[in-house]
Length: 175
Image (cartoon, rainbow, N blue to C red):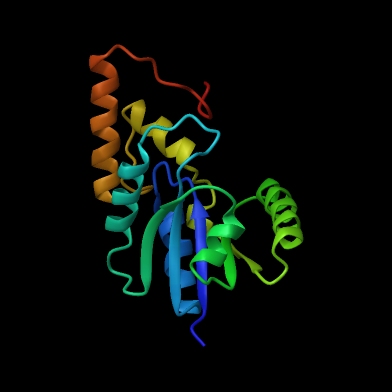
C-alpha cells in the first residue's frame, strides 16, 4: 500500500520551517502532497500561482513530494488524492490548541484520515510566514529564514510596494 499524506497550508511564502516539516514528512510517507490553499482568510502577499512555484522550487530535491493548489475542505482534498494522513507542524503551545481543534473537526468529517503533527526543530520555532514577510518588507535579512529564491521574491515584492508607496503591514515586529 502506498502511504500518502498531505501537508496543507497557505505557504505565503514557504519558509525553512515549512521545508523542514515537508522534508521530514517525505521520509515518513511514500508520497507527500504539499497542498497550497487557494482561498485563505488572510492578507496574502503572493498569488496562488506564485506560492505554488515558490514551494515547488523549495522542495524540488524531494522526489516523492509534489506541490499543488486546492480549495474547499482539506479532508475532501485528502480523499481526492488518496491520502491517509494530514501532516501539520507545531511550533508553540498556541499552535497545538488550534491544530487539536482542527484535527477533532476533521476527524468528525473524515474519521478514516489520520492527523499527524510534527514538532518543529528548535532552529525554526520562531518562524512564521508573517514574520518572514515583515522582516523582508522592512529590509531585514531573511537568508536564514527562507530559501534564496523566496528571499529574492520577497525583495521584489518589497521594491514593488515601495514603488507604489504601499505601507508595510506590521503584524509582529511592532517596536
